[in-house]
Image (cartoon, rainbow, N blue to C red; front, side, top):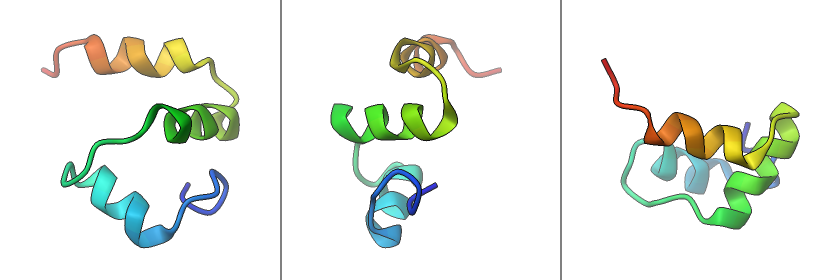
Length: 50
């Protein structure tokens, strides 16, 4: 995912681990890579985790 969204693997890993927050621009690139809307990602983040 880091590669297809144009991020450094280490930077992506630190964000995925929750050490650093994703920037909106990074989430936008991830959404494009996944072929989903950015609002779909934010909707997932707003849902409580079971």
